[in-house]
Amino acid sequence: MAESLVIIPTYNEIENISRMIAAVMELAERFDVLVIDDGSPDGTAAAVRQSQAAYPDRVYLLERSGKLGLGTAYIAGFKWALERGYEYVLEMDADFSHNPQDLPRLVHACRAEGADMAIGSRYVSGVNVVNWPIGRVLMSYYASAYVRLITGMKLRDATAGFVCYRRRVLEALDLDKIEFKGYAFQIEMKFKAHCKGFKIVEVPIVFVNRVLGTSKMNSGIFGEAVLGVVKLRLNSLLGRQ
Image (tube, rainbow, N blue to C red):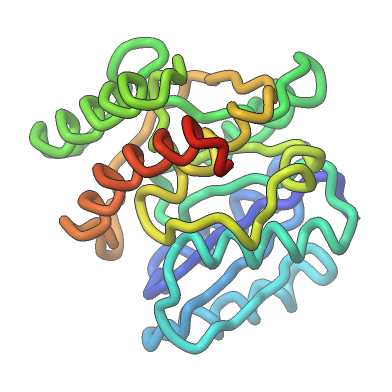
């Protein structure tokens, strides 16, 4: 078993998932992969099973019956990882917006540089986003600025979904009390780790907009984040973390 597990939630990622798994498997450093598929009608799960045959004991699949939300997928993956003893647990998208070549850099920040959580950051060294419409770049950039203002965290990319956790972070958080399912889930995880005093670092990455498949972002997910940040801060001030 590898020391590190990459969790990849999927819904209709047939164009990407096999290539992504192969890219992770080909890295010099060993990573296992757990795909959590929410009942994709396009055959994503079947493609993962083919990858399991090609990479036995390195690729795993959890199938869920319907779109249950990004946050619940990651929580299920975190619990799965903890039960199996992984030391480093990583979040990554299936669509190559996150470069699998950056996975060792995130683990290195935790293993060798003392971080408890390492974030693949689009904004820690400027704006490193490729092929996004300018409106979405601005929305994402200023969402992180808004999060900094409300929560007091110093992170430049609080909404990032490319993250490495040390095991002890996930063990310290009550995963059953993580509230948000969409965009706000990423903020909630960082804020609760921050409140517990864990060391969070940002590792600069280049984020590339997906070429194949369809984005899952929508205005409802963004709205959850806007209101959710205020709720997180209020709960913190009232001692409800």
